[in-house]
Length: 107
Image (cartoon, rainbow, N blue to C red):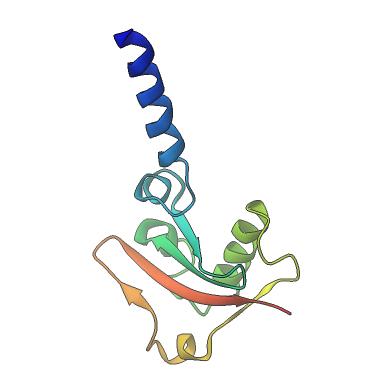
């Protein structure tokens, strides 16, 4: 009986770790996505991943990267746009491990 409980617990933890907004997903894949209403989203990108784009969240390469990741998760089929506050950096959140950028799906 204990083995069955252990297996169920392990499967539940595995499922949680695969969520696109989890810290495990950020560490494993270099990004994590969180959506609030299916239209607005936040993408957290690990600093090591961001370095591949020159460290600039406004670069075309970074924008393509975000579009590809959204498409993988069936989000924003018509593309995405940055929120105006991204350009001046006022709504870019940075930690010692990642940068979070907010966006909106294109209408």
